Length: 185
Image (cartoon, rainbow, N blue to C red):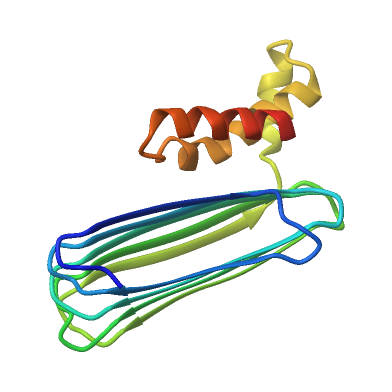
C-alpha cells in the first residue's frame, strides 16, 4: 500500500527455478504517487519463471510504468501476468504496461496475459505485449560486420534486455545486473 506522493520502484531479475512465481500487489492511492515495476528474466534449460503483478489505482493523479523483458531458450518457460485496475473515480491515472520476450529455441515457451480494467473516464492507459524470435536481419547485419554468430546473438540479446537494466535507479545495482546478464548470455 502506497502513501500519497510515494515513489515505489521495483526491478525483478531472475534466471528462474524448477517452478518460480514472483507476485507483487500494489494498492495505489493516486495523489501523485508513482510506481515503476520492471523485470528481466533469462531462462534456459528447463527453468520456469512466472512474474505476476497487480496494481489497483484507487485515487486521482497516479502513475504506473511497467516494463518486463524476457528471454527463454532450451525448454524453459516464462510467464507474465500483469493487471492494472483503474477504479471508478481514479481520474487522471497514467498507466503503462509492456511485456516483450524473445524465444530462442523451438521448445521454449512464453505465455503472457497483460490486462487493463478501467472504470474511470479521464485516464491515459496502455499495454503491449510481443513474443518472438531474434531479428534475423539484425543478426545478419552483425555477422556482415565480422561479429561471430554466438557473440552477435549475445550482443543483440543484451541490447534487448538493456532497456530494463538502464531503468534501475542505482548505478551500482545496474552494474551488478549487467554483469549477471553478461554471464548468462
